[in-house]
Image 1 (spheres, rainbow, N blue to C red):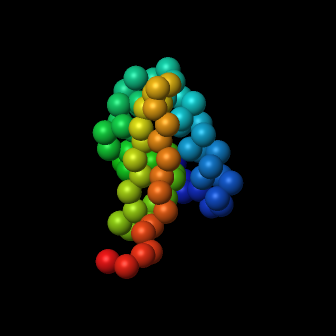
Image 2: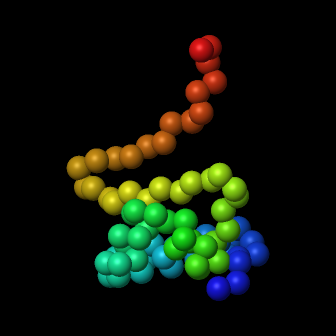
Length: 73
């Protein structure tokens, strides 16, 4: 697949992958285990060294990312 050319296109492709992962068990496992090849196959470019991690939703858990620490060492 040709690489996405805009942020909107990337977001649309990611949304389609997430939606498809609801019913496609192989896709879901691939996204959970090693998403970079899946993203590349769907034309979703990643900057070198950037890693994306998918996590399964759990109704008894909320996942919130913390911003980068900027205080003293």
